[in-house]
Length: 294
Image (cartoon, rainbow, N blue to C red; front, side, top):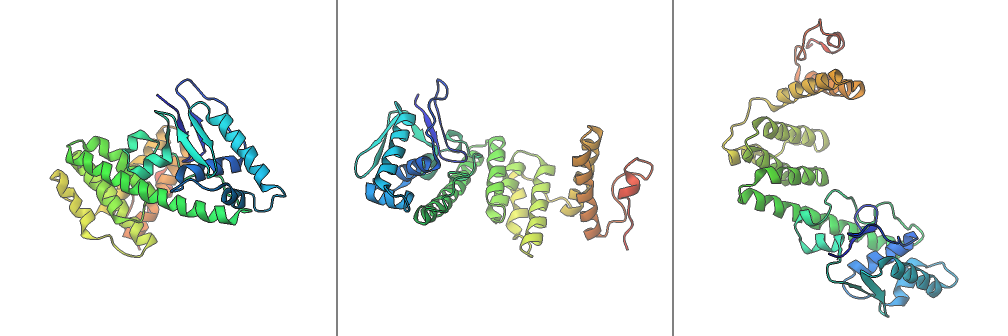
């Protein structure tokens, strides 16, 4: 088994036997990304122009970065030539390449983050533009890969495996209706009525807050996947769920999280015109949270 070259999130090189030398320098990682994701090998003069536009001796600076990469990649990959080409040994993979190829999300870390997260070269505008395009390309491929993997698992009767992928998809594309629809379908297919309903209600609240619109009926209709019926008034369910989560957090000693949950429940209750929140005034936290509609 070879190494995994990680370009998503904080870049690194992971080997079965443990970490090896780590290439130094942001522009060294930028060079590796260019060599990995460009459609064809890139001429040295273009790399020098993209990465060292203000250097007195750009070719020399490029040679130093190449030397760093060779040190860090050996023996799992080679990088050399003009144009520069990256050659991977058998078993060695680049996570961003896996995403772009449509590989199953289990073959890479779908939670790692953006391409070259934290590496932005403001002094290299040509590379900065290229990186912005590649980040969006990888994000789009990640969304497509997750949707395909969720659909496959639902089709194969494995909804429990689809749920975490669908939750990742919602985090990646929170304002895409299809993301929420797949999450509701996954929860419904797994038989968890409350979780499916809460996911649909959360989608409605998010769309109303951020877009000023209601999601289409497809989100609610996703309940049919698991033979479930929509519970009445999903927002009231969300208030109850937030109250219970807040009470549980307070009981566990997580005061900050518990109070934040209860504040969220109050805000939703105000919007709904609820007479009062779940609980009784005699409970320690209830006087602050009990309320009457106007």
